[in-house]
Amino acid sequence: MKMTSVIPNSRIVTYAKIQNLLRHIDRQRQAAAAAAEPGAPEPFDNAGLTCVSSDGPLTVLCEANSEVCYFHGGLIFLTSNEDFNRFANGPNPAEYGRPSPSRRDRKLSVMEVEFVLGIASVLDPLAYWVILGSDLVLFVDRYKKKLKKWTVEILSLLLTQRLLKKHAGDFYRKVSALLTEGAWSKLSEAVPTNDAFIARFAGHLLGTYGSMEAMEKALDARWHTSLNILHSLAFLVNMSPKDGLTADKLQGRADMLWGSFKKLGVHLTKNEVEAFFREIELQPHEIKKAIEILGKAFESKNPYQNSVIYPEADSR
Image (tube, rainbow, N blue to C red; front, side, top):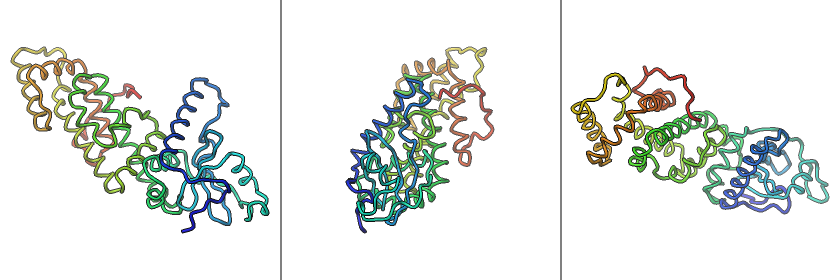
């Protein structure tokens, strides 16, 4: 394969450079949001645009630090804004030695671009060339339906994790080892709950796990673990505040919780169980909400089909 870029002076991007670009883009977004200026520059204004030339399609992924990051022929490149704009607006054939691009079309959505950048952020150039292939549009089209599904599933897992962390902090810290394995441990807390960032996270996971099948298994395993944790707490959902807890009832429920988590490999002392129970007892609504969020996202596999979804905000 000819591994040269369409635009002169371009250079192949390493995954470390992609990570730096993404950090810069996120800071730029935050600054624009803080300034609340309608005309503030958006690093993805041109994301997804494709320039078609005699050397094949070129797709813009992002713009940052006066540079344009683009995909061509299976690799990702950086070039200056000046060189890119000269090329995109019709370079001098004598200067570049090739015809001008014939047209510019928007081929990819922001979510799809974030998905590709998420893959690139964990792989070196050769690896993402192997995964993405030479045609980015065909690659994204292959995963289009999966990306929507993964986005919903990942979002549901992040939201249920945050509900536990927010409303049952001590308990969450005890079971967090079950929820933060592998690629999730570094990223899940940092990912905002909006579709574009979740799509980037999905790309990161696909790059980390290496194949669609491995990623599906990883999501299913995480869903199963989360649901088991919530199922162990589900007896609290139907408890009425008017019931009150006698010492015998508390002990019985604590024994149930202790036994459930022992099966999951979480070892709790009697004092810990009773302390966690008191903490979670104040938020049974949140436990049910977390179960329902998972149920909606993984509906085809979920045993809680008949749960009534609460109308309150989901803490996004």
